[in-house]
Image 1 (cartoon, chains in turn green, purple):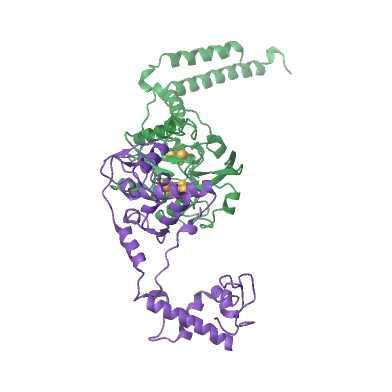
Image 2: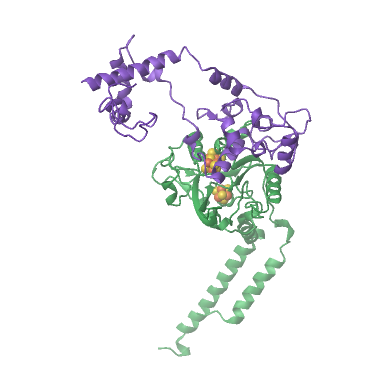
Length: 306
Length: 238
Ligand code: SF4
Ligand code: SF4
Ligand code: SF4
């Protein structure tokens, strides 16, 4: 059978009408970011690639020692990603920057979960195993996780990793923002505490934004005038400032809209007032009716045929 | 055999050195240690000058190389060690750096706003704990050291920029690691050392201490000779 143009427009008209009658403000998407969260500001001009943060992260989180922990040279030959054994890694990039002797200058970039203000992973998790805490940390609760790995697909930074090697009790693994340590008074994330050059500044996100803006303003020749994570995907608790474009150090160019805004808006509008199931069954019903009619015609020997 | 005896004598001397070191303490080292432990009051307000005006201020105040008294400092502040403690202190040759750089304002970049304060306040007066919420833009002492040292070493292409160039790693306490009888003889001690440090033992066999011949860079008139020593030409060391 075929859907004629006329039929199609008729259905769409009905669908449009049912969307139009929906009161628009009732489901307007709202950010669920807790106020006054902690954050970290990573200053790529300060990082010297010592990889002490990797080591500290492994220690405070009970992970295995980082791959070739003392190596600050050949380890950078391959680009690494955080995985189920390492919540953070440092990568080295040659972006064309040169020093006064015309020698290429490397830029080192730390990778870990960004602890988004409106995290896609939290929104994607169907059992609430991931939650955005008041500290700003996006926390994972293994006892709730059913292993669907939606979070891994949803994350715009491709952060969560999975313990595929463990068939019995696999976990989703990602940076915890040292939730336990930072919820205590005076507590610091392991990586920020060890960093010798304070390439990682820990503090309240609002304060960090001020600090970052001040640094950009006072050193316009050094920094790009952009705070990565201030607006990206609606803002992230971990933010970066740099002297080289962010996409050259593998920080993806992302829109300012939080990922959950789009997906949740679509979901919510689909299910508001049950219009979409009604429409769906309406469409199906119409199809079936039409099919029946045509079958009827085809099977009718009076109208030709064999 | 004689060579072997020689090696053992060397080790005995070393061991004797280790024993006496417990008694004798280098006075400047002790002073540096004491100074490193001090925590001075935090300077909240500072004078935000540019480097040139700082230089002029320092000249006006009559601060010169002659004022540098201490030869070296141990950078071993409790402010840092309270948080993280992984390395042995760094020995910072203050006088040597002052002479090489010949510009105090390079490191003493700001001064306290208080007019009675010293022109050249120590680093740890302004830079203390990291991430102080009351002074969020102020970097902590550890970062101040690292940024200052590494940046200059990189710019001047001089001085170490790797970790172990400045720091020695904590040496674990060998009391627990080494089991020796009471009053051990030198051979027992050497054996205990070699149990773990076997590569060092091998390396030792290639040095002048074992071969009794080798380069003599400190002997006037023989600086370029590479095969001097009791193993070849010399009768004795005098
Ligand atoms: S970076 Fe990815 S894993 Fe981390 S909070 Fe954001 S969406 Fe979740
Ligand atoms: S915040 Fe904690 S878990 Fe995350 S990278 Fe730093 S040390 Fe690792
Ligand atoms: S510890 Fe700090 S300087 Fe070292 S690699 Fe990590 S972020 Fe960079």
